[in-house]
Amino acid sequence: MGGFVLAIDQGTTSSRAIVFDGAMRIVGTGQKEFPQIFPQSGWVEHDPEAIWDSVVSSIHDALARARITAGDLAAIGITNQRETVVVWDKDTGKPIHNAIVWQDRRTSAFCETLKRDGLEATFTTKTGLLLDPYFSGTKLSWLLDHVEGARARAEQGGLCFGTVDTYLIWRLTGGKSFVTDATNASRTLIFNIVEHGWDEELLALLSIPAAMLPEVKDCAADFGVTDKAVFGAAVPILGVAGDQQAATIGQACFAPGMVKSTYGTGCFALLNTGADRVVSKSRLLTTIAYRMDGKTTYALEGSIFIAGAAVQWLRDGLKVIGDAAETGRLAAEADPGQPVYLVPAFTGLGAPWWDPDARGALFGLTRNTGPAELARAALEAVCYQTRDLLDAMHKDWQNGEDDMVLRVDGGMAASDWTMQRLADLLDAPVDRPSVIETTALGAAFLAASRVGLWPGMDAFARAWARDHRFEPVMDAETRTEKLRGWRDAVRRTLTAG
Image 1 (cartoon, helix red, strand yellow):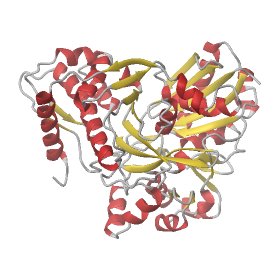
Image 2 (spheres, rainbow, N blue to C red; image 1 turned 90 degrees about the horizontal axis):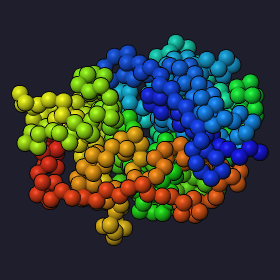
Image 3 (cartoon, one colour; image 1 turned 180 degrees about the vertical axis):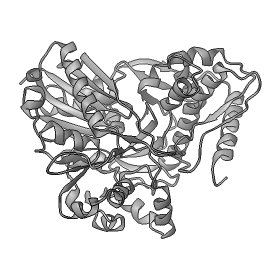
Image 4 (cartoon, helix red, strand yellow; image 1 turned 60 degrees about the vertical axis):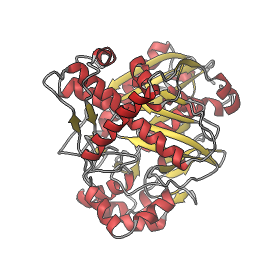
């Protein structure tokens, strides 16, 4: 057995591969972006082959930079963009259509029909989720209805459905393993998180044949062995978790009440609720945080669809910045007398609003508004949305504690300006870890701990280290005024408002 573990972090806009050594240090990385496909307004797709190519390229780069070969790896852990749907032919392995991405809104009307039929409570009780296009189930149903011959082929057992983790495992193992983990399954809208299995009633409501579904395993389990033809060695895949759950693990949020927020393309906050499956009164999601040794730990989750993607929009859409790293400096230079608000509902609004038909809006523009004010508005929008999520979590999770500390990670967490403004608007401390690649770290932990290369959960939690704590410094009057302006902007953006 080798002394290294590989984490595959397959994200929304790029794939990453990170090699960790036995001391949990990063020794090699690789990353490759892949195209985003927008067939029409509100639709988002990926080419599964482009995803696969980006993963393979990233792995080769990471191994080369670590100066090791696949034979030096003890295990592989996988984390992935959740809810994105891939369907492929069981015989040929070829996808029948582009992957439909978690951001995609094409099934909004279908979700509304199910709601009007009074079915949302049925889905929520069993899955912890809401009837929203975000989740996999309605996307899968759409593919079966719109790809010629797909439904008949699926009913005959000739098609495979998977979230991205399942598709990658299938490819890595040469088609020998057709599996997923409990966290990814819990985001599909067809997995019962009470009974821990695919739900026959929900499958019937969405007209999805059970024959096309993968086996569901714990997060740390035997997911198969890589085909030697892929990397030249047979390496066990021993850990899998959806990206936000992997970040929760990487942040060592193992105790009930601990909360983390990840800032990537979107922003996702998870609150560990332990063995308690808390039913939200604030339209948050009840989800599986992780399942280890058959024991399920639950979480409350708030999902923000647009975080770092708003900065990408400033760069690639408006072209007012040349590099994402410029936004913090620009925000610091913005005119404090111009309160500009960006509501980044480019693909609808997530928690706690859940308005799939809302679209982005800017408020407070003047003739003096420039790149600095737009940069500040984009960064502050992430902070305001996080505040909305945590307020909702406090309403649902009555644990008697007011001394919440938020653990942050993801690309935007590297911005000191953004994290300070986040602490100010939350009126709570924000902790940034020394290892900011917490999503990959969580996937690596699942695999490495299973082979004894890394310690168990308690020792791993003790090893968590803080890089910096951001303490709130904004006065209460300013905070209240800014939050009032934000909530007014959201109210004017909601389609029902």
